[in-house]
Image (cartoon, rainbow, N blue to C red; front, side, top):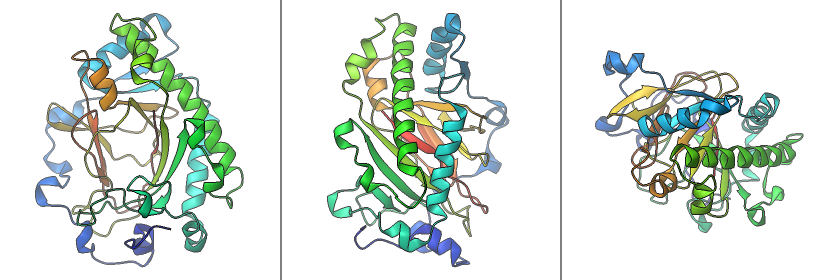
Length: 308
């Protein structure tokens, strides 16, 4: 159980709090301001790479890595039905009674990245909190994978997470080979540099926010590791930081967002850029691909984020 935890964000939203609690209010310089976005940022569009176009995929990925550090992939080999199953499993968990969810609460005594249901990942209790809840699964290597720690009250949940984990592992390895080829390196170069796959799958849930202009769902940051693979629902709100400007990343049906993380950037030296992404209710920054999410008055279903 998450020790001395702040109330779950979902519980606050369900209670209808009229004002944002002080611990969720971001400093003015970190808040999202979509109205002040330059016209060029509104017009910019993150690259989309068709992985079935084998003759051109490596070059397209190389350009996307160099220019953006993030891109959507389509025809990626992960069944759309599995993506829908994963979204559905996560939504079923967060719609369950709080008592059921708390049975799988994080044990913060084990560190900020403890597996399970939680509301804060930052170790510093004095930090401004994200307006989100999440469930973090430890999935790879398989020695870390213990489905008994995952919800048992959603039919098929554990099997879905395992199948999703395995599919995302295969896609990540394929992408690392394509990135290597795009840099005129041996296909196995990035995989060997990264080493044994290490994967977490985080399902984030973003509840309605009473004052979304003051909050972030996830604070700006880049991800540790090699690659982040992210699926969205149809609500949107995700942004990536490019040339010091936040660029919206609209959801792409059946697409998967690929984000270079810190380890990939270091392994590829100066060949690629690292990006930061941001969704309206969350904010991530610095290093790797920066990303964030804006707060929203309506429910925003979580991206599902496997990190390898």
